[in-house]
Structure formats: C-alpha cells, structure tokens
Image (cartoon, rainbow, N blue to C red; front, side, top):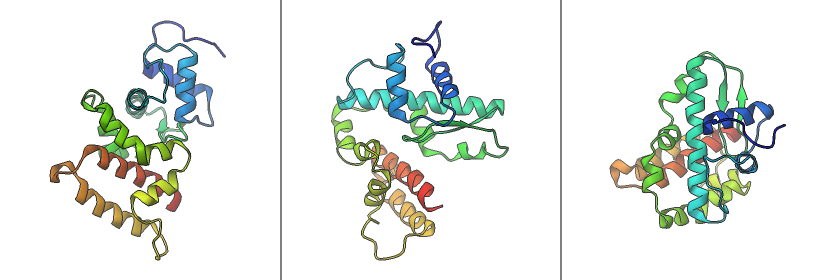
Length: 198
C-alpha cells in the first residue's frame, strides 16, 4: 500500500482508490485520516476539533462521494453505499439509479453554496447536538431522539418512523421557514433509522 497519492489525482479519484483498498468498507473518519496521511491536497490539513474545519472536511468528502456514486451509476459499474460509519463499493444493481432521484442528502452535498454559506456559528449549533453523536457512534439513539421517539410507548416500526419523518419534514422544510441544516439532520436520521428498522 502506497504512503502517498501519485500524480495529480482529484479527490474523487483518491477516494475511489481508497475504497478499492477497503473492500469491506471504511468509516468516514478513517477515510479522512487516510487522505491526510497520504497528503491529499483536496481537504484541509487542520485539526478536526475545530467545528468549521470538521464541517468543511466532511462536506468536501461527501461532495466527492456523491459525485463518485453518480459516476459509478452512469457507468453501471458499481453502487456506492454512503454512511458515516461505513462507506463501501457494492456490485451494481439495475434500478438503483432511481434512488438518486429523491435523495435530499445528495442534493445538499452537491450544492457547493452550502459549503460557502455555512458559518462557524451555524456549524457549532449543528455539531453541538446531533452530528457529534452520529460521529461518536451513537447514531441510532441520536436519530431516535431527533425524531422524539426515544421515549415512545409504542413499538417502533418503520411505518411509525416514516410517519414521524413526514411530520418533521413538513414542519422544518426551508420553504416553510425551516432551516436547511435541520432538514439535513432529519434526512440523515431517517437514513440511519431505515437501516435499523427495515
């Protein structure tokens, strides 16, 4: 395994190279650390404990991941599974392209204005609650708390979670005066809970 990237590879190409080396998947944190260790010039080489640095590094990586996923779909060569705790290449499946059509996270990360317009104050509020817990490995509990289902007396089912998701999206959609960051958290929470309750 090489210690540095060779040539003038884009971040997308560097990420693809690392994913090829980790067939069983790699976490977002490991991916960032490996990119830094191999001297990638496409992400900040600063301490991740600074909230704005963490956000920008995360955003740039996920922007590259969603672009790579689109490229793989178009080439019908593979499917890229994207989640903070496990990013991995899977065999291409016909029909998976439809997943990209209504993917709010994809839309968020492919819009570079979110990288440009998000302030340190915005990031600190975001990281103070949901996101820090997600990256700390408490994703299911953080998602349930965001949905206010962690104390639910009802048995949790995917149907109940989807109903709550629709309510929250309706309440917090930017078109109705909500915030993009809150909607992004809701969408990620839904993605996480689908994995646990499908």
